[in-house]
Amino acid sequence: MGEKVLMKGNEALAAAAVRAGCRFYFGYPITPQTELAAYMSKIMPKVGGTFLQAESEISAINMLYGAAAAGARAMTSSSSPGVSLKGEGISYMAGADLPGVIVNVERGGPGLGSIQPSQQDYWQATRAMGHGDFFQIVYAPNTVQEMADMIFTAFEKADEYLTPVMILADGLLGQMMEPVELPDEIGELPEKPWATTGTKGKREHNIANSLYLQSNELEAKLLERAKRYEIILDKEQQSEGFMLDDAEIVLVAFGASSRIARSAVVKAREEGIKVGLLRPITLWPFPAKALEATMGTAKAYLSVEMNMGQMVDDVRLVVGKDVPVEHFGRTGGIIPTPDEVLEAIRTLNAKVGE
Amino acid sequence: MAEEQVVFERPKTLTTKPTHYCPGCAHGIVHRLVAESIDELGKGGDAVGVAPVGCSVLAYDYFSCDMIEAAHGRAPSVATAVKRVHPENLVFSYQGDGDLASIGMAETVHAATRGENITVIFYNNAIYGMTGGQMAPTTLPNQVTQTSPYGRNTKEAGYPVRVCELLATLDGVAYAERVTIDKPASVRKAKKAIKKAFEYQMEGRGYTIVEIVGTCPTNWGMTPKDAIGWLEENMLPYYPLGVYRDCVEEGFETAAEAALARAKDVPIVTGGVA
Image 1: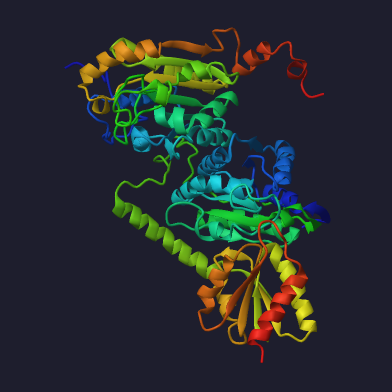
Image 2 (image 1 turned 180 degrees about the vertical axis):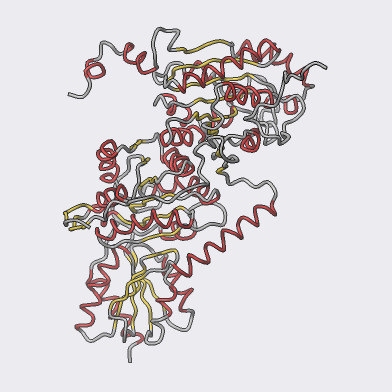
C-alpha cells in the first residue's frame, strides 16, 4: 500500500488492474466508462502492456477470450449496451473455463437507454449474462477504494476458479472522485499449464474449447463446473452489515444505492426506527448466509435499487414468503435521494411496526 | 537388403485422429498443407491455431499444436490477442466463407487493417457446409443452395464478396493470395502460398491471408470429380487465382513500410505526433 491519491472510480479500476498484473486491455468507446479506457491507453505502453481499441464490443470480448486462453491476465470494460454485446464472448469464456475480468459501468436501459447511472443490469450480471448454464462471480463496489480492491481480487478469483468475473459498477461510482490507496503491485502470477502458449514440443497440445458434440460429455462438464459453483457459493459470499443487530426493517442495497440507503438508515434511526442495512458485496454468489442471519429480528425487508426491482427477487428467495419484502427504486438513470428512501422506510415501518 | 527410407509420412502437426470431413472435401488437403508448412518451418511447438465455427470446427482435434475454438466469425480477434500475448508464436486462424466473410467480416477487415501479424487460412467453397448447405457470402449468382432454392437472386441477395480483392486495399496487409486445390500442381502452389504466409508472419511483415478456393461435393450435390469440374468452370473465373498483395514484391520489407510510402505526402503520417 502506498499513499492516498484522489482518483475517479473508473481510473482506480484501471490503475489497480495493472497492479494486479493485467497487461492486456481490450475495449470500445462507450459512456460512462470512458476514463477507464483512456487511462489504459496511457499506462499500458509504459508498463509493456497492450491497449487495443477493438472495432466492436464483440471483438473486444473475443480478444479477452484469446488473451485468457494464451495465459495472460486481461480485461475489458464497457457500459450496459456494450456489455450486452459481450454476452456471447462471456458465455464462451465460461464454457472454455477461461479466466478474465469484465467491468460494467452501468447506465440506464433498455436499449440505448440513458448515460446516467443505473443498476438495471443486476439480472443480466447474476443470471442471464449469456446462453447456457453458467455463472460469473460479480463484485459490486460502493467506493472508489473498493473499485481498486475488488478488481485486484477479481483477477485472483478468475484465475482461482477459471471463470469470468464481473465488476458491476455504475456511472456514479465510475465518475466520482475519492481518495484511494492503490494495492501493491502483484509479485508472481499463478502458473497456467492449461494455456495455449505453444507446446514447445514438451507436452500434448492444449485446447481452449467449449464444444462437446456428445451430450453426455457436455453434461459431465457442466456438472463438474457446477461443483466449482458450489464451492464459490460456499466460500465467496461477501457482504457488509450496518446497524443490523436489532433491525426490524432491513434494507438491502448494493453499489451506489447502498450509500444512499445508509444515509437513510442513519436518519431513520434518529427517528427511533429500528432499521439496518445489509450490503451485498458479491452479487453472485448472493450473500444468502448474511441475509438469513438478519431474520431473527427482521419484520420486513426493503430492497433499495436503481432499477424497477431486480435484486429483490434474490432477497425473497432467501427470506421466503412469511416476511414482507418490498422494493424501492428509481430507474432509468435517476439516483434516489436519502429522503426518498427515508420516506419508504417510514411507510414500511407504519405497515409492520407495532 | 536395401536400407529403409521414409519417403512419405503424416506431418507431425497433424494428430492421428481421423477427420469427419465428407468424401471429396478438400479440408483434409488444406489441413495437411498447413501442417506440412508448420513442420518445414520447425514451428510446431510455437504454433497456435484458432478454429472457426463451420465444417472445420473440429480442427482443434486434427492439429497437434495448441488450438483454440473461437465463436462464429471471431477467430481473427482471438488470434489477434494470442499473437499480442506471445509475439514469438506462429498464430493462424482457419476459417470458412460464412465464418470469415459474413458473421466475422468486421473482425476480418479490422484484423487486416490493424496489420495483425497473423495468418488467416480461408477455405472458400461458396456454401455453409456444416449446417447443410445454405447460401454463403461467396455463393455465386444463380447457385442453388438450401436457402437460395431458385438460385442466388442478386436482386434479393446481392453479390458474392471477393475477399482477397477487398482486403488487398488495406494498408495492414502484407500478403494476400488466392489459390485452389483442383489438381496436384494447384495443391503444390497452395502449399507454397501457405508456407510463404507463415514465413512473412514470422518475419513480422504484417497480416497474411491465403484463400483456398475449394469444393463442397456434399452440399453442391455432386460427385467429388464433378465438383472439381464445377469449381474450374464457375468458381475460378469468378474468384481469379493469384497474388493480390505482396509487400515484398512491391519493394517493401513490411506492410507498414508500404503504407508509409503510400501516404508519403501526408505530414501527420510521415512526421508522427507533433
